[in-house]
Image (cartoon, rainbow, N blue to C red; front, side):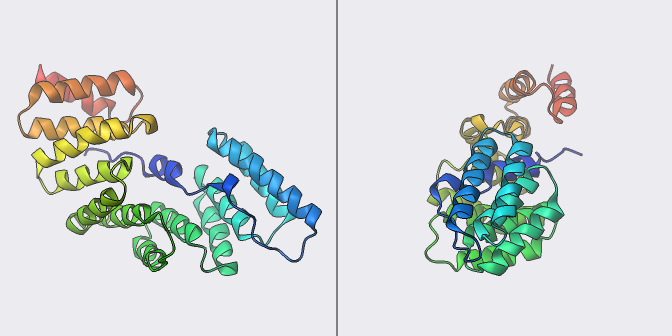
Length: 259
């Protein structure tokens, strides 16, 4: 059976951090000096996270949380830090705590849904995404549509998933993962020609995110519509760019068939 590209790898990149531009929520139980100290550790953690140094980021988020234990922003990003290291129960715990303090914290609610999708709790994720969608002041609605589509896709509800990915792309035509999973939804519905077009588009959009599945499923789509030269090219590109991908074995077997 062909493997899906890693949900964790996708979700980590898409987690809403934007920490450096956010103000700390008020925590009346700490001093102004402690607030500044917590903000500094949060900023350092953000920099580490942006550079992919997740253990260092988590350490800074934990220090910020020790100084300011009831700040929803810190709790949310502590949850993000745990998520990046695949410690999902702890991630869920701290994001839930952030929401218990500030139920209107939409970024945290979307992050909770991301964790729940990874845990396979699709119904709970969809409920949280619906609450996020009800926040008419929230601007990044493309991410709400994308994650709603992702939950539906994981539930094998490909038609409603496709519609959600399309809504995400209407808001943000450059949304890498919405384009990729839009193509994947079309592929699962056996609309291989349309799938090949979307998956080809996702290769360029997702280049900086290193989404190996874009090449692989593009190759499969072209194979299904008898574009064998394009299929072969995609597989060769996949093996050159991502030699350690978990798609490598299937890609090599397909290339043998195409020779």
